[in-house]
Length: 485
Ligand code: NAD
Image (tube, rainbow, N blue to C red; front, side, top):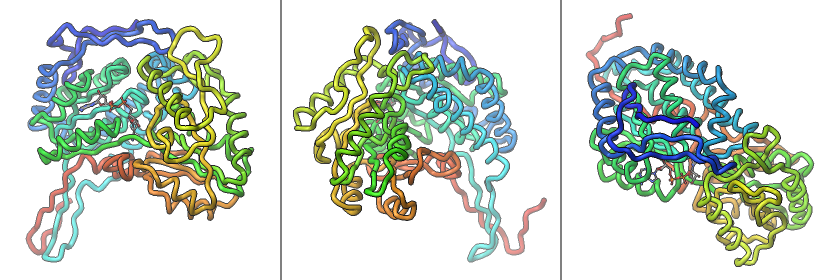
């Protein structure tokens, strides 16, 4: 049991304003594994005030990028020092299979921190140039006080995707993790404090939607960086729009894997599967629509079923587990409801559809494959966020692209083919922010990541991810000016 009785506000562990707590329950055992205070509006007010003071008068925005980068590098190092402990903690919080989690939930965040630490010494914060009227300095300055709001599915990863570039920029941050995963957020806070982050720069306020809305609307916040559902993203975008507050949104997805008619299925299915049922299907970038050529439909469906059937379902902490439990009982209800909806719509369950045999605790559903799916069905249009795949037939490459694009979302996708150039041609036609051609790597931390359409606004990672936390100022200089060394 990992318990906290205080909130991390501006680098200090302080008394919360209420006695309300969040219990963290293991999705595998249904046993309480942790407890943290639930932040209230008053705690958010305090955190924003401290962040404001640290931004307006503290050392952090005035330090060199290299000094700030040093903190990020030390945080990455400290996380790597206890990879196992952090992986177990996250699997206990939200059910991620530990073998996947060690890489994606813990190692990947250290890569993000390292990337931004290195960018601190190469990024052009100041650019002197000859403008049309004379010399000009374009200065990129920290955006101010940032509200970072994340969901529970890849908690440390998403925290680092926001905190690393925000802090490198010189901004200060109030971080609101999801109520399901406050423990790793508090551990991260401890690590930042130990790595020499000055007082006031970071606060962690575990809270639910209402207090999140208060943070978003807070006049002391300059920028909201949100990852979560499209429904919440629309509200947050509207609230920020009304106040002309800067905002970036990483939202839901319903991505398609296109298996072309020349694909070698023995290679293609194992390549696409890790991104189809990734993190128990609780991933925004999951390839949940599998598009198969009509004349190879049965072959693709059978191969998929065979590979999914072989996936080991079980305890999230067992290194052999490939599919663990869903985050919460309500998430299992949601996924089971979609499985019913799919059947009512006329799709057929080719595999799964129920709860796994022999497991009597935990919020498990069987990995499920639907066949005879039409793209207009709800199971093909709505984000299920569980291990449920739909196999959809298409006529030719144009039809496959049309179906892939027939979605309100545009986050990710992949094409699997014997011809890389043909794959690249398909990739260029699918309207999503990230794409894979015969690859199982959906995200490159040095390159932009984000959504077209209802999957988001803005791009995280790479230099774009840093630009999200910078304002640009053009300073016109007198003729003949040149910067002193
Ligand atoms: P959610 O939108 O319900 O909650 C996400 C976070 O936002 C939580 O911390 C929640 O407390 C907070 N929140 C919710 N409504 C809010 C509001 N109106 N104002 C302020 N804060 C609010 O999402 P979820 O169900 O927890 O997470 C799953 C969703 O996240 C899926 O849709 C998934 O696709 C998406 N996601 C997207 C990405 C991406 O990079 N595009 C990555 C991971 C998850």
